Image (cartoon, rainbow, N blue to C red; front, side, top):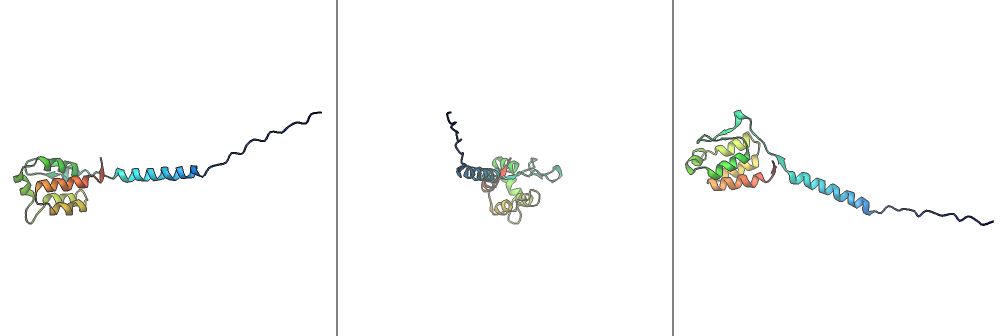
Length: 125
């Protein structure tokens, strides 16, 4: 009588590489979260910034756009030796004290626009 040969299935081993992949994907998720930035703040209508020339601004992005086309006389109406209306609004209404501090140092509309553009990079919108 012939003897039956028993086949043994090969064992599957888990590779430690799989756990590294999980860690790597976790890092990617974390970096996406960081890259997304903070949410852009939009001021409610009653707290929007009313520019002397009639423009109404409700966000840091709107301020950047306004500064790029603003006439020098309008800018100096809001920014002077003892006042900086834009910085005050950004700090109190939009809640960005770092941007406001940098804006207070800006004495020209070009510099102010550059400051706002720099700080906008931290936001997602």
